[in-house]
Image (cartoon, rainbow, N blue to C red):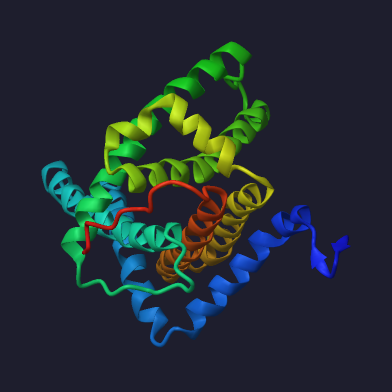
Length: 264
């Protein structure tokens, strides 16, 4: 490994930054007293939506009741998103260590999560339209099971892209405080050019790969596996929310600090 005057070169620092931040974040989480008490509620909130959808699709509850339950569970999901957003904003502001906040400020988390949902919804519509156009242009519509491989690869790459894209626009929302400002093509493109480096790409692939592997393994345990998968994935989101936030903080060295008025 090249060293200049006893120190890592800037290039090597970028290559190792993801691993260092990931290791430090994991160590901080496990050293936090009662850390699992902060993780389990998030996993439970994420699990409720999957359970309600399963009940609706299997016909175990009526459509009217199902719609009401979906609205309620989406509200609870917003709280989980807002909780992660709190951790993300702390990382954007360069806090030295991960602090797992309490769940008591649930209303503020819910409001923040709702705005994040609108951002995700807007870009999901744009992404679906673009994805459909690419499929049509490239002729990737499968006519048999054997022809689904290119389409699955394209879907996988699109998912990984959004894993990295959404934190960038969330960071812009945190700095500007306006939803419409995260849909400005020019500024968003400039942020992407500054942020997307080797370590950031490694983090996106790491989140996707670990989440997929963990879900496949834990999913073999039937209902117990469903619960464990939900908790495990929320734990991963806590860790990688912190990691991606710190990587963005290091890349965007100038600019206003991320706002946190939702829970101040």
